[in-house]
Amino acid sequence: GPLVGNLIGEDHVNYVLMYNMLTGIRIAVSRCQAKIRRPLTDEDYTARHKYSFDIVGNELTPSAKYDFKFKDYAPWVFRELREDYFHLDPADYLLSLTAKYILSELGSPGKSGSFFYFSRDYRFIIKTIHHSEHKYLRRILKKYYEHVKSNPHTLISRFYGLHRVKLPHGRKIHFVIMNNLFPAHKDIHETYDLKGSTVGREYPEEKAAKNPRAVLKDLNWIKRGKTLELGPEKRALLTEQLRRDSELLKELGVMDYSLLVGIHEMQRGNRDNVRRNTLKVFSPDMPLISRKKTVSKGPQSPEAIAMRRIMREADPQQLGAALNLPEEDTGERQHFLFYQDEGGLRATDEANENMDVIYYLGVIDILTPYSAFKKLEHFWKGLSADRHKISPVPPAEYAGRFFAFMKAVMRGGEGGARFKSE
Ligand code: ATP
Ligand code: CA
Ligand code: CA
Image 1: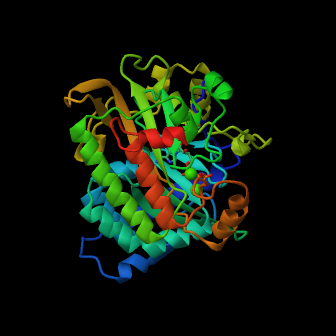
Image 2 (image 1 turned 90 degrees about the vertical axis):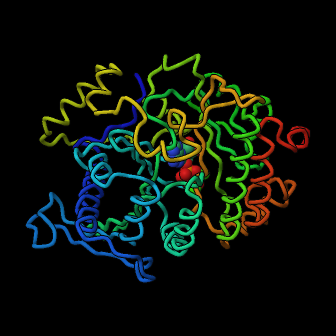
């Protein structure tokens, strides 16, 4: 059947978690939003607001279906980021995420064990993160904020919120909300996750031939002889922004991030369904851990039943209507240089004239500090391969290599030949 991710119904193992996340966001974000804006203070970066939900409710929190605790981190900082720099309409943000409790879930697409959830309109991604990533984001928040402020067109992930759900038995789940780089209404025909490292960075071509949803890597890019087709104007702009972004990442001491590249060929259009494609990018090589559902079939809401029926019928148009997908990429993307052309960046030739390809680009997975673990991994991998090509290298080296590769992937970019011959 078509891949539309797993819509999370009441019988899904992660339904309670989704319910708690969305309830927490709805209450916490609207609470902060209701207050009158004031200038940020230093305390705002470390602030955390606690909420306690239960089935009875109290003067601070309405009654909820389950007992859980919720923490909202640096709410004022994220509010300002969303409103002033990411150009999100506050009501829109809350509506997309929480007007109906619908998320679709993709299992863990990476090795990290994180889970990804899409808001029902596919504009937002909720990514569960490791506690260390959470601590790290809090530590760098001020620098991140300053960077976004002075780089309105940054390619780095746009973080809209940082939260934590704590379940009654004590389990804590940290998560961020960020932008989905891929638009809901365009097919992504090829996806690459590029790090600038070549060791182990290949998705098997035999498998790729059968799976158009595969997330390809550096070596696939090189072997296929790909280039980002950008004329001098866009090339210069993109290079400069990538330079600034990798400077920041170097300064923050992170590594393991990548440039995500989604390619839409306008001639091919949207013959396959777009949303399926958006989800395809997450299609893991391994079976989805989260796919198993609980056996017990409790009472089901009419909404959940209707949704399942629609999913079964799987008519893309109908699904789009059911999920209230916007028809066009409107809204915040028009404010960003690299997301202006139908939500992305249109290819151009040497005369800066448009070509029939749109790129969807962003720097993702930026919360991995060069920790002791990575140092160890570096050591072990370093024994068996050229240590400058393996991915866990110190931040300065990682950033330098990343930036060099990104320059090389552009048409006319210096260094392309060097990378190809490696
Ligand atoms: P690992 O640490 O093993 O790389 P991870 O769990 O940290 O995995 P990410 O690297 O953040 O996961 O993302 C995995 C994949 O999910 C990416 O290669 C990309 O296909 C997709 N993805 C991640 N973030 C976004 C985003 N903002 N927009 C669109 N797709 C995304
Ligand atoms: Ca990654
Ligand atoms: Ca990661």
